[in-house]
Length: 120
Figure 1 (cartoon, rainbow, N blue to C red):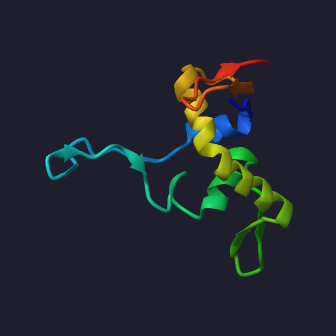
Figure 2: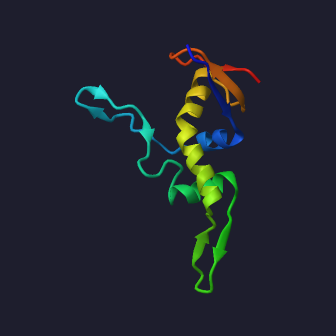
């Protein structure tokens, strides 16, 4: 069995804390209740995903042009960071749910059943 390692960061925790869930307690497919899911296309609320991530993680960084148009500052480095966090988010959520904690740190598991343990 391979050892799987993952570093859960404060950024992961901030994003998890701001996930935009679609809770329809009465939704069903046939007779089967539908599980809650993220609001499609708006995982962190209204607006563009990167713009919402920037507000959550880095605070507003905007440019206001002479026509009062607001643009978010999103360079290649910031976008790459956000893309990495989006890819890692399901595993980060799995660690939080499995360990029942919101504690940043290094985690590992030896099991394909995903029994995460905080190692530091």
